[in-house]
Length: 374
Image 1 (cartoon, rainbow, N blue to C red):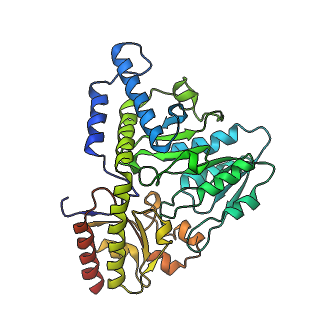
Image 2 (tube, helix red, strand yellow):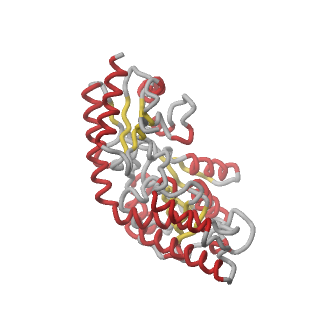
Image 3 (cartoon, rainbow, N blue to C red):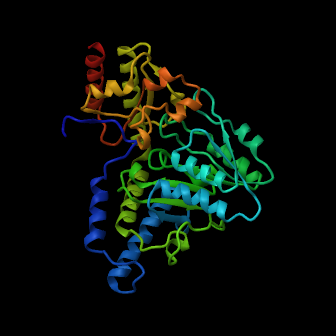
C-alpha cells in the first residue's frame, strides 16, 4: 500500500532487495544439503560458512561462536534452558522484570523445574541498576540474563558493566540483543557477554532465522535431539538460504550502521517534537540519549492508544510489544516502570527504519493533528 506509513520496525522489518537476491539464489541454485560432499552440497556449505563469518564480523565474534537457530525466541530458550540443563549443582538465575516473553517464560519454566530465579526491578525510566545485579549474585548463581535494548521503549541497558560484574564473579552472562544487532554498534567483546541472542527479521533478514552467540569453551545442553549440525546444539538440516540472507543483512548493516542510526535519530526527534506541539501533555518514556536511535515511546494522557491508531488505519505503529499487542492488558514493561494504567493505555511505540523518510514523518504528524483535533 503506497499510502501506508510504516513506523513499526521494532516489530519486524522488510527484507532488503539485496538480501532477497541472496535468499532466492540459495533456494533455487545453490539449494544443496550442506552435509553432502557433491558440488551443490559444497556450494551450500560455503554459503553457510560465509554467512556465519559475516554475522560474526558484525558483532566482533569468531565464526565458530555463531549458532544458527530459527529466531530470537529459540536463541533465548537455548541460552537459558540449555545453560540450566548443563548445571550439576548451581540453581540460581538473575533476570529483569522487563525482558521479552521469550526470556521471562523460560524463566518461569525453570521455576517449575526447581530452579530459583530473581527478577530485578527497573527504575522509572526503565533502566536496570548494575549494583542491584551485583547484590543479587549468590554462590549458586550460574546465569544472569539482561536484554541489551528493550523492545517496547528502546532503553539501552548498561550491559557492558553488568557483563564485567558477571565475569568477576565467574557467572555466565546472556544478553538478548534482538533489537540491537544491526541497529547500533554491538561487540561481544565490549559487552563482556558469554551468550547473545540475534533475530534476523529485526534487521532486514527473513523471518525464521536467528543466531545465538556462544563464547568459545562454554557448554550448553541442546533442546533438540538429532544429528550434529551447528555443533550439535541445533540438529537438523540447516536453513542455508535463510542463514545466507542473515549474513547478507549483517554485512549491509555493518556498512551503513552509523550513518543510518544518525539519520533515524534526527527523524525520531522530528516526530517527537511534532507530536509534543500537537499534544503538549505528551509523556516520553526513557531517556532520549540512552534509547535506541529509531525508537520513540510516548503516551497521550487521557487518550486510548488503540483507539487513536484505529482512526488512522494508514499508520502502522504499536501500542506495545508486537508479540502481545492484541491484549488491552497493561504492558509488563511499563508496569515495571511504575507507569499508571491510564498512561500505559495511552502509550504508542514508534520505531523507524531504513525506508522511513522525512515525508513519512510529516504525513504521520498531519494524521495525528487531524485525528486528535477531531
